[in-house]
Image 1 (cartoon, rainbow, N blue to C red):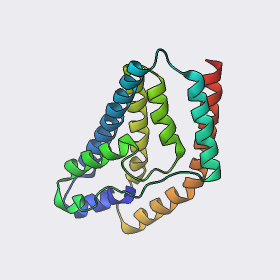
Image 2 (cartoon, rainbow, N blue to C red):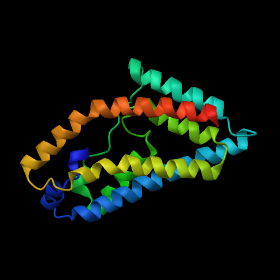
Image 3 (cartoon, helix red, strand yellow):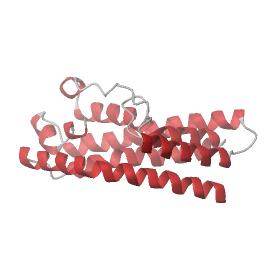
Length: 187
């Protein structure tokens, strides 16, 4: 899906990449924020206080699940028919909102589930909102790597480069989860 919204593809569809990407980022941040606020608010209703040690456990379990490949991934992807059915800003916003929540499409890391659990365990609407905003923004940023993909060759090179980085990104995510667990225990 990532390479579907490139300057090359947007130009071919008669759309402006900057408009589509802006809508995508806004949608992703909004999707993450909405789900984060909902989970943080639910946690506020259900829990007496934030459960930081439980959050540390969630992070460690997620890191372990990623290392062992024990992740339920789901099979749903965004509807690529939108690319030819709607204007760029419409599918940008829609794709972004779906990907910003993290759970309505293919999940590539247990970190996604950890973020959702941390939003709930924060037991605070505003903390959940903040985590959701950051999550949605981080989910949107890889699309910016395609900004120079203006020819078929550049698009293939960018896609190959992103694929090569994926293993390192998985390992880095596992490291971040472990560091988050340590930080939560220290808190």
